[in-house]
Amino acid sequence: MHNVVVRKSSAMFPKNYENWYGDVRMIDEKDLKILEILRENARTPLTDIAEKLGVSESMIRKRVKSLENEGVIKRYTVVVDPAKLGYNSVSFVGLDVEPTHFLDVAIKMTEFPEVKFVATSTGDHMIMTEIWLKDGRALGSFIAEKIGRLEGVHKVCPAVIMEKLKDTCG
Image 1 (cartoon, helix red, strand yellow):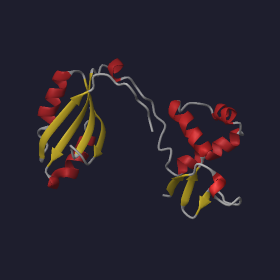
Image 2 (image 1 turned 90 degrees about the vertical axis):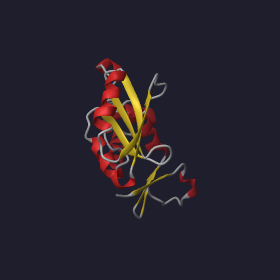
Image 3 (image 1 turned 30 degrees about the horizontal axis):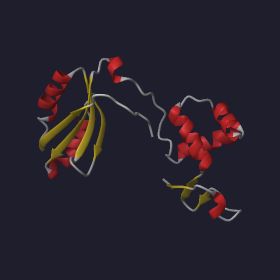
């Protein structure tokens, strides 16, 4: 896998400098604009992106393919409204665990379908999760019956999301 470097302007590079230098993939302003458009709506036709940026559709197709191959674009997905699916309790839940069980607990959390996001972190909690459930009672049960029974977990800190003000991908 190649490293990714953001290049704001080609002015700092020689005229014959290409977008590739060794194993470093250079991301330029056009790539950033393509990513911005796709983050807003991943179903935007490549012809529309080309028109917005004033370039050919084939150039956009090649750039998108390159961004995909390099792992800059990881996947295309759908963002849903949890409440419209019956999940009225969305919570960020921080977990503190014994260091010897740290990775086991993080991996186990990825196995629960109610858990939509798992990350290891520094700061207040060692593991951060996002959990979608029907209501507060279901959250309490999930914490007691599933998280609380995991070996090594010694502190569970839920924060129920009251209202999401910003939600962007990528």
